[in-house]
Image (tube, rainbow, N blue to C red):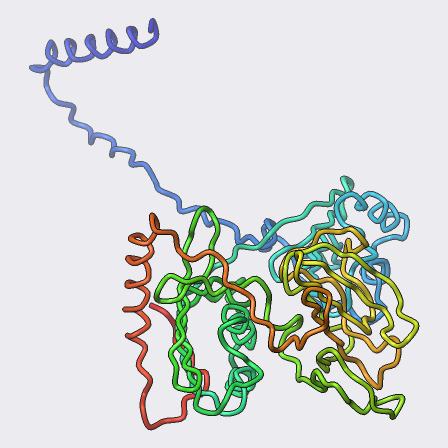
Length: 428
């Protein structure tokens, strides 16, 4: 306060003196030009991985087959002693032994005549990365790239399969998988026919202007055998789910199939020619042919009641008890999902194992079986009741959301008379 008062008093004296000498003759010499403040525009550094890349020379690359971190860094002049310290120090952040071939990396070096590597950045995924400081600190930390979303619309007419429609036209086939998940109990995607059509409103995710996949799906219309099927996303009691135009849930008690987009190589039968034994005997399940390692999912919530090797032909198998009525069995597995053991609780859609050919099998496939009240039944004919629909107290709010999304869907024109295969447009 004292300093402020001194400034005020000083200013008062200056004003008084200027008035006192206002009649004095003007100076004949030219007055000095006023000094103006100069605004200097400061260029912000370009950041990547949180580092100012303007100051470095960048080398982008991919991890080669059987290539280790030590090989990559040693070839850039980093000593083995430093590499060993990095490997030991990084264990709590990222195990360098988990570096995979095909993944991207970036080396930031000085711009000297003899470049010196200062940072090594390994991209764990399109979003996540790990930074290794090659300076005296030898710091290791992880970060995430900014993910941007762009709302898009897609529409198409199926010629052979939904998957092929996406692939043939350069679209992300994951959209087909997402649609099959949403309509898992409403539409039999093994029976998709030519002429089925769809339109959808969804988000696509981007990192560094490169698409990394499908985000949220807001609304879908899928016409199958001439029947319109709708799905609208809605938040009911802190759970996002999909409901039809009447507010009924599209999520049923069980998934329709335990793995995605596989062909059925053998159906439920009382007399089937065994492909290995070459004799006829009952086949009380459904065989899904799929590549070895294809994830197998539990069709519903339940408890693992058996995990073993079946010597009489089933190979590695799992049995899950869902409730007092239904039990499912998954056979010929090449391996089991993380944390799967007898007594483990599993969720609907959780990966419990992987397709294989253990036991008596002519090739990789999943033998899937369903028991109802202790008796094996045809899995393709099991009809489970739907889960809870939109509650009455939420129906007014749901109607507003549904009507708004329905209006946006109807703006996506079909273009009659043309064969439109999974055409995608940018959202505005």
